[in-house]
Structures are given as C-alpha cells and as structure tokens.
Length: 357
Image (cartoon, rainbow, N blue to C red):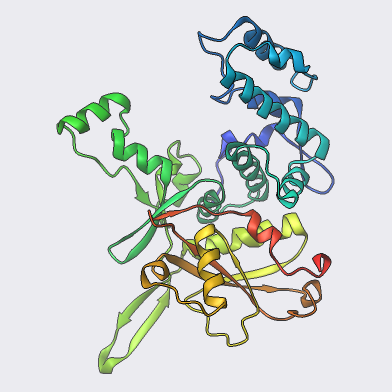
C-alpha cells in the first residue's frame, strides 16, 4: 500500500519540526508559530489591545522573550492564563532541545504543569515521526489511540474502537453542526452512523481521508468457529487492531527508551510466577494491581478489559536483575463509560529497566 504524498496528520506539525542526528524532533520557529493557531490563543473581537499586540509580536518572532509585565497587561484572565501556559510549554521545549527530551523530562518529573492538549500534541508529533515510513493504515489508526480518547463498543461480536470526539459530535449533530443539532432535537433527523470499520478493502482511503477519525478500529481478539463433536476452532484475525497497537507500542519504546521489545496481545494471564505488569490506562492499572495482590475484582470491572498483552525484552540484560527474562504483562481497559484513554507515558515510566534500578 502506498502512502499518499499529502501529509497525514497535518495537525501534528511534524513537517515544521527538524530531526536531529538521533532522529528526535527539534522545535523550530515555524512549529512554535503554528501553536499560536490553537483555539485557546486565537484572537477574538473582544481581544484587548495588549493581547493583539502580544499575539502579533509572537507571530512575527515566536521565540522572543515575553516579559511578565507584558502578560500582566492582558485584560482578560483566561487569555492571560492561556498565554502563560503557552509560554511555559514553549520555553520547556526550547530548554529541552527536542520534543522527546521534553516529554520524558516532564513525565519523569512527576509534576506535569501543562494541559493535556499540549501533551497530546507532543505525542502526536512523536508518533507521526515514528510512522513516517509506515505504510500500514492499521498501525496509523492504532497510533491515534495514544493521543485521542476512544469509545469502545461491542457490535455484532466485534469490539470496535471509535474516536470519542468524532462519535460524540456525530451523535449530537449528525455531522451537520448546529443545524443538525436542532434537527435531531426536533426529531426531524435520525442519527446516522457516518463511520466505517477499517479493513483491507478501505485501508488505502485512510491516507487521503479528510475524515479519517471516522474509521473504527476492530479490537476483536479472534474469530471462533464451533465445529462438530464439541470442538472449537479459533482463528486469529489477519488484520487485528490489537496487533497493530502492539507494533506501535514497540516502536514507541524503542524510539524513546532505546530498548527493543516484542509485544503480543493475549487472552489471559496464567503465569503463576507473574512478576511485573503495566497498565496502559488508569482503569487497567487498578485492575492489574488488584489481581496481582489477589484482591477480588468485580465481574463488571473485569468486563472492561479490552485486552492483555505480553511484553518481552529482546535483551533480558536490559531488565532489572530480579525480573530478567520474565514477561511483562500489559493491560488495556475502558472506564465505566466505555472510554479508553491510553497514557503512553506509563510504558516509558514503569518498565523494569536495569538502568532505573
């Protein structure tokens, strides 16, 4: 499958970043300037003279210092806070030198001082870098799960992940904005499922699709076929979103930690010598912790598990000595509302690395 010459994920700002010799992404004036187009920083008719001057000044010189008095002169409290956060983010990037270094420093600090929208923007740019030579639409779609929340539903025996913001918008407006909202509320219009499951047949559309967030990712483990004489035959899906997610997570670890790992989706953990686990989200972390400690987990919570994974190190010497050679188990789960919110930093902070012991 050939990638389109157009830039997929243009909102990532990847084309405005510069790769260093290590392959990490260095911020540029063009990249920082693009951040000024975010809705939180866009000028509005109510913007005061000082805000207009600050915005235009930063557009002209995105890396210039901004004095405290210049921020204090903004009349609107929200605008002042938004620019304060933006400058904290900008200055952090410049000080770190690369987006990767900034992300690792921020997450390891334990004191995240910028909003999730900026962190998600960094993660998207990093993933876009990792996928630059990727021609697999399933991996690209799976990578979206690391910076965009997903709604997971079971439909016709398929576990499907859909972009939360897109599905919520379609449910509220049928994709027709305020007009659609009014028509839905009046009953004159029925919600339409303007979404499609990513498949081998339509995967090529992902690279050109302006509405690529309308693609659902199939996270079903396998197909089960009942045979005669009470036998059951299980076939692993050829194009599994879980396998694609595993490949993305392998790249993520290799790029940011320099460690080669292999990750595979599994149905269950039967290891009596289970030594280490990492939840990919808040919910799975809590479930795995309870299971590890032999605490009871209610069936309703267990049902939220989307998948388990085994992670093995290519070089066991890179693991902590007390767990070297043992598999690491990963979990992925929805919250009570059926939403998956992956925290990709968990995989970077919580692996049993020898260098961290």
